[in-house]
Image 1 (cartoon, rainbow, N blue to C red):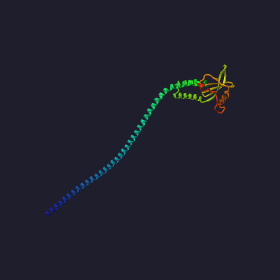
Image 2: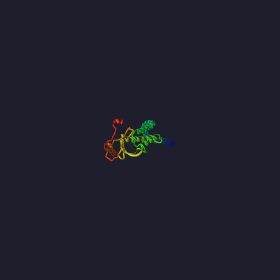
Image 3: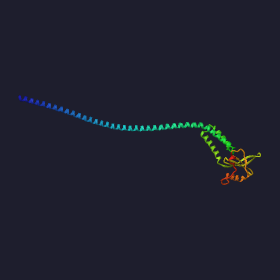
Image 4: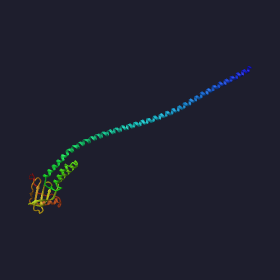
Length: 264
């Protein structure tokens, strides 16, 4: 009986021991599993954290690159603005200069109209005091002067065109002083019209020659009357006519011109 009780006690103790050991092992397994779970979670969290760090690093690199690109753009814009400011200042200076030129042109145009009328008046007086040649007709000198008076009062013609035409008239008049020409003219002799040849020597003198070579007369610049030319000068005068008509080779010719005292 005692042995049986001991046996039962031993069995119970073994059962209790086994139960106790099993409980400890189970507890340890739970702790281990929990630890493994925590470690795995930490690993996952660490990996996620590293990925986040990598992403942030990439973002930082991208932001840095964008920042540098923006700095370059800002510098480029600054240089562009400076260039534009220089250009604008240049344009403003040019506009100021143009405005000043326009004001000067306006002043010139205001002064030009009376000046051109004075030019025509002076030319008119000059023609009236000059040797009386090529005065009549549509293309005559008097008709040209009349057209100039009409031109300076024509508001539809630009100032530049008026000035050009007046200068052209001056050039034509100036050319007369450098030319030696022959033209025919109708004059009255004893009340009858007679055709004569006239030699114009620049603006120095004009010589009339009858078609029958029977009469020569000369009009000096500044004189009002024609004067007879002695017959001894006929040969030289005829030679001068032939040179002016381009019949003879140009050369020096002699004509009866007044001396300094006579010219005065």
